[in-house]
Length: 253
Image (tube, rainbow, N blue to C red; front, side, top):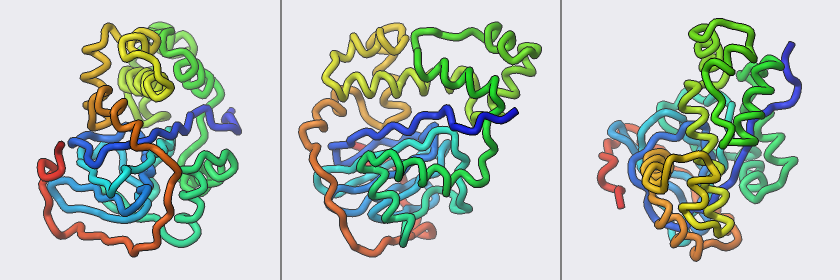
């Protein structure tokens, strides 16, 4: 039986810096610039727009206009576009994206519904596991516990988890813990405290994971919070220069 309500979170984080180092998003991400366009680039090219949907799992770097951007992670949704890296939001989707990035719950739900048409809902047992991991990163659910909850052999349970969520069991737990730590840091919690609360071994472990999956260090993220502020909508046309190669190192801080 499928769970009718998604157990996945949709966190929004401020990005007050001008550039992010090369990193892969574990989940479908929406980036909206505050005062100008956002550009994502990899070895194959670049995509620029006021609001971009970025494919997960592709290492890329990001550059922003002044005052940075905001990012919404749409966890659990399969990238619904054919573009190899990213697409610029236009029309009604762009308007919906602007509302969603502003934190409107109804807009986030509608955006998830529109983008998630090709994403199968999770079976009830799997949804309960996702909720448990996301709600308590300190729980550190084991592979044995995962298998018990799914009523399956361990290897089969791990395969089923990756097929359902798009991430390995280990990667999903890391990503959930990292999101928890990011929320703590944004709220003003010390990095070492955030690391402990999110289940990381120590501050160094959190810092390595933070940079690997967000493209910046916790200290840079904290410094960038001073650049926060209300989102300023822009109307510039988006640009897609996928056939113009740009090396990620060009926009590495």
